[in-house]
Length: 282
Length: 242
Image (cartoon, rainbow over all chains, first blue to last red; front, side):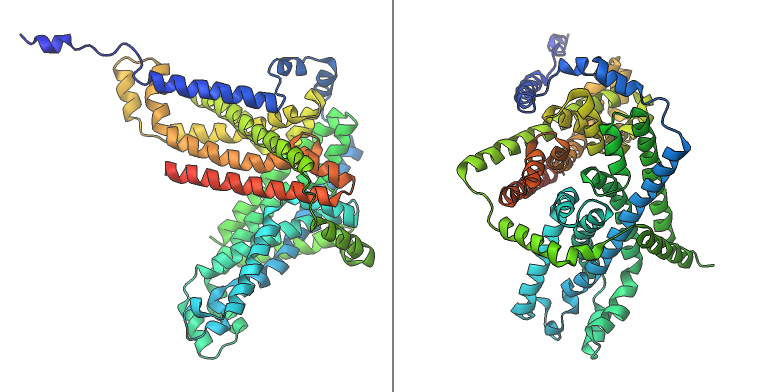
């Protein structure tokens, strides 16, 4: 008889119990502390939507505003949102593209015949400064740029276009340079060594290798810029966001609803368009 | 016709139409007036307010921003888990939650719950639930069925299958998604304040509104430091999780 075997009994408790209890209590403590910091009112959450004012606002969402005048306005503002994103990104490309060419170490003339690390310290220093300023432009959120610019150039689409142009030129400059550096260097170096100028080596040795990737990345960023440009409207930079902000301040729920719908349509349109365009260059 | 030529042509048309239809005044940026105010901004920016009283305020606002982003991510993670466990028919709802940006949620919630970090946290939580819910659902749907099948064949209840097979199996991926969203949320929380939702953003728009550029500079610097810190922390965690 095998008594040892029948003595074995599967544990009747959760083998991971201790760890789970400890993790859970830390979590509860953290949530409690953070709720204090953010004035998070778990009970008020229930009241928030049963109070008459917010409920009336929510109820006024239906039916959405659909007068011809307002629809025309909504469509116009939607187009302006797209236009702000497009103009901003175009300017960003105009800035980012040449910056990326300068940043690309493969094209360095002072490194001809040497390794890249042996290029002159001036050119390395300049590249470092340029790269960090691109990173700075990119890491300040576009909304903060817009807040600043609204105070410089006044309310309206100009501030939005400039905010997108600034943020995205940092982004495009840095990423274009990364794309340029990821290609096969042999054609570029042979052009440079044969006496080709920096631009010639770029145009005939580098660009043909990565033009598809460049376009597809830019189109993807255009999609992001459309989303940003809605948000920028909230600080007065024009377009759909500004209209939404106005309608909210007037408690016109039906208008907000229409604008939200327009926004969802716009985002899915930008999504679709960016997918289609990127497929052309896939 | 070559589809690329068509695409390039239509893109160019769109750029031209955009510039033509907007009443842009880009030269305003380079006018002496704007230039001088830019110059004044920049010179004040280079002298950030570093008085300890003000720095302490900025520190408190940073804490608030961190708490907003972390709490909202936790709420979203909890709701996302619920969705992944039970409610599979909610994809359309998740899409709506996801496609409305945080800032729009925030200004909608202002009306319901008023100014302050509470509305901001809720707004972040709503948007993040949409994102995390979908990612969690996909992570759990795409895992191998073996362990879950073994448990249910041995007579485990659906809850036991979820907590002892599906969840542990997907956990590293779920945590990695969550940390990544937290990183996004701290950026979002830093700017949400602009519509009055507390934290660093609210301080920024307040001081910018009063044209106190030296204070605004301190707040922007704090935002950049905070974002960089969280980036590196979340990068470490995600690399650790593989």
